[in-house]
Image 1 (cartoon, rainbow, N blue to C red):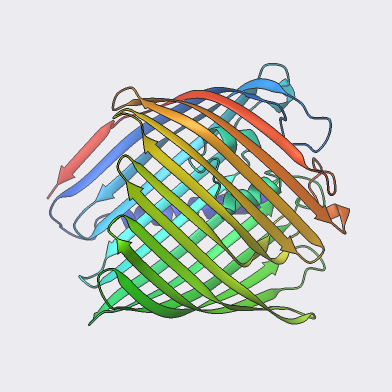
Image 2 (cartoon, rainbow, N blue to C red):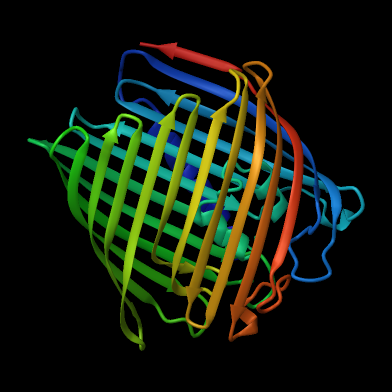
Length: 413
């Protein structure tokens, strides 16, 4: 019943997005495009399903098929991206599946005026197993926080994330931003850790910045979190995070950003806690390459445990254009997710090569390794494939290709 309700919600969000994407009036240079896409690969994994013991190795293939469409005008940019997945194995055919998992993302950028912008984003990821995320996601191996939480739950959960951001430039160097966001996790499995439970995290934040120059800005902000849980005995929780922030371009190729403050968390019936919270980002572009490093900690949902906790970690990625068509990459991440009676670590790293055959086709080769360790005072909080306190390790060797082309274009004034 939960899954059925959530599917209807996802369809409503997509329908609302398509309404937003319709031109509000006559605008010059309107452009609508449709890109069908297909991705397929062959891989070997030495731990199918990511287990702490009795590991199973097998050869398999994953496929993702879908489309990307976008609309561009002077006042708006909107895009919708949809994929569905299939996986097949040589020997372990009991893990074969097709069409059961989907990924949907929608973006709408509105230029309300020369000084005011509005941004909407929605991401929906349902019932896709670990092998699909590792072999097809553009986040692999430096997975973002949402996919990391799904990996820690061994993909026995699905997720929907929505955000809306309103920004305004006041003039004389001042800018402000107001945002709202919601993230929902719900269980796919039947074990007590995930099956039949839903976890909600929503909140709002505001920031104000003063730009001393085009390259340096200081500001302050406040972020509010509200966490709710459907599992019996899980009290609601809130968090308040006032912070200072800075953005700096020391050179045209180097960007530094930092946010730091004290997060005050409150779980009903358990009082208040104060912890440092901060996020830092470094990006550096150089001839033929780009390096990005992110790190920090902040209050968050602990999906496998279904409670309020904190996430802390670091992830980085280096992309280098070896030739005009051949690109190499190396990246990795470490994230710790901890809450009351629960602690989990995920480490990932990998290398890859991508060859652009032509403007439609790319071929790639990758290696990705995952390491997952979960410890809890309550065994029910750990997915069934993991053993309490024992590390699960998976290596994936991947060869694949993807195809995308512009199938339809319509422009008008």
